[in-house]
Image 1 (spheres, rainbow, N blue to C red):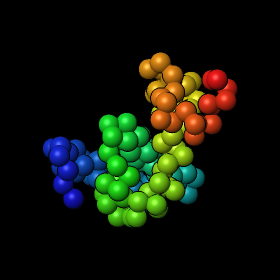
Image 2: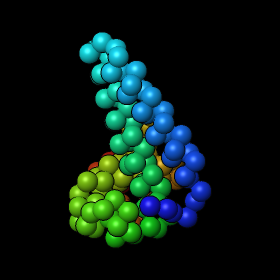
Image 3: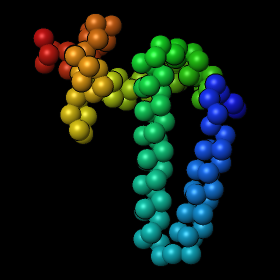
Image 4: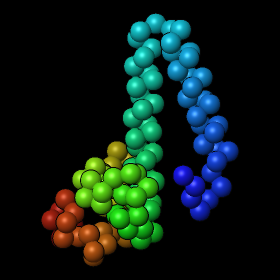
Length: 119
């Protein structure tokens, strides 16, 4: 799958690093497997951040669903709440992206978990 950007070389690099890491863990102690699992969570977090950026730019859930190989509904169910919290809600480092930009956007305020706290 090729998008609008030139990401092929970077994707190849990331894949090579992950394969090398998995080989290192395969030769290590079983306890080291936990560190590889942390990488899986980091990849999931990166996917959510990428989708949040796309949604912030106005990319539709239908387009995201096509890219993820799911239905629009499945994409919204899997990523919708995480993306909303990332954009509008409190995070580990404080408020979400939109809160840093001056508050919750009106289109999300009614559905935001922080809407009552802000009002």
